[in-house]
Structures are given as structure tokens and as C-alpha cells.
Image (spheres, rainbow, N blue to C red):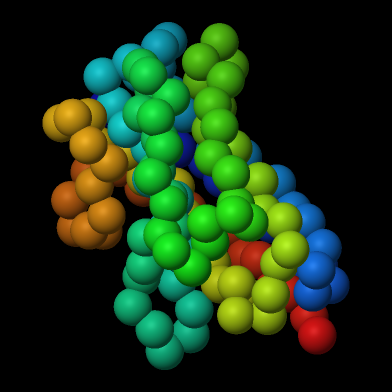
Length: 125
């Protein structure tokens, strides 16, 4: 079992930055991959990016490439989503999720087995 808790959301001005954290259960979680997803009102939950615990390899949605960076601290069992150059369209509830790593980062929400509670990110104009 994996338990996930997101934190770090808030209100930020367009062009600003936020760093989200996802604390995970377990001592290493080395067999898992972590995904970040977001969901805005009236929209489907969408993939933002993901990272493998073991290798640190990452994969990003085109909409956030060059602006968002995912990293992890294995000793702290924590995954981070650094968000720079934020835009109003980034406004959403952000979720972290976990699934056993199968050799590539999966992008479909239903593929993930464990989810955090979500944290609100609001980007103002």
C-alpha cells in the first residue's frame, strides 16, 4: 500500500513559481513511478509529468515542458513539482499518484493505483 499527501498549493501571480510536494509512504518505493496530474473545473483530469523512483527518469506533457520540473528525494520519500512561469491556464487541483513502474511513465489516470488528496493551485492574471 502507498499513501500520498500533497502540499504547497496556493495563489500565485502569472509568471511566478510554486513548488508542490508529495510525501509518500514506504521506506524506498523503488518499484514505483510517480505521476502528477491536474484537473480544472469542467475538464478531465490530465497528465502533467511523471518520474521513476529508481532511475529518476522523467516525462512531461507538452503543455508544461520547459516550465515544470519533477524531482525526487528518495531519502525523504518525497516527489516535487517545481512550477515556473505559471500561467492562468495552469489553475487546477494538482494530484500526485503512484503505480508500479513498468519501464515507462504512464499518462492515463486510470492506470494509477494510489492517489493523494489534491492541492489547489490558482494563478491570477
